[in-house]
Length: 52
Image: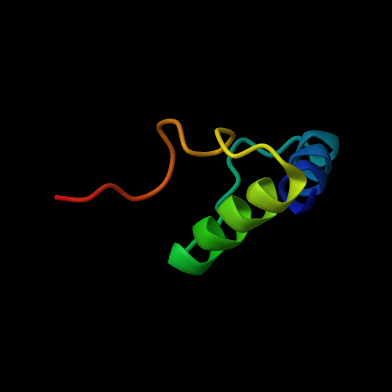
């Protein structure tokens, strides 16, 4: 929801770029929220950090 609000605000002011700071905690939070909502496959496809 936060990212959607930031995107809408940037469109309103005509911004060319939006810089977002994310960390591993943000990815973990997204995964847990998706699991609790019942969508375990959502958010695990091609996003987030990858193992070497």
